[in-house]
Image 1 (cartoon, rainbow, N blue to C red):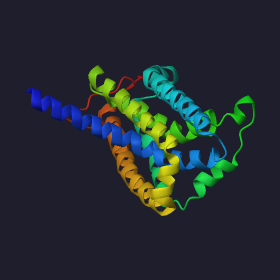
Image 2 (tube, rainbow, N blue to C red):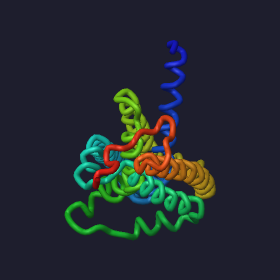
Image 3 (cartoon, helix red, strand yellow):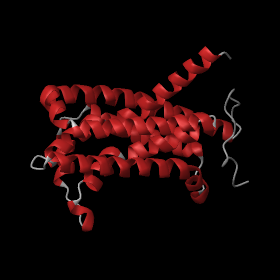
Length: 234
């Protein structure tokens, strides 16, 4: 494989990975939520909150990406099972995005957490669940587990950074985004993201089902080998 082909393959894998994470995180939703939550705050305070939320969510993504394999082994979870479960969850989120009329963000903002971090919106609801929610964390774990090499795993981490940095700037410039995009524009883009996410989630389920067939020796599919948890009970 020549240098040009390697570069093309790398860029393509990175773009696909970014798309997978980006559509589930949806920085636009974060921007609109941030705008409504920080209306009376000074610009410096807004930047501090945005930066903290970005650091926390990035850290969470990295932790679950690194410990994904350990979690699988600890609970005896096969990669196939996680792919199927993750795909089903993401499909549900995708349908919610496609049918969304804006109520979801309102419900999240009306839910006030209890405890010391209740007043720190950088943690809840910005870092969790707007940026690093269950669906996005599951997506990152699946992508890292599916990475064919350490090099590709590194690209997943790069995709996470690109997405979270995008979230940071979407929060910092939320006033501009809300002004020029408006609710209608946000709804259109959210529905497009939902459609893309639905396709990705279905592919996760297909990959998981293929792994199950191979793990149980029902079929031999080229390019797919039995997972580490296959036939564990035998």
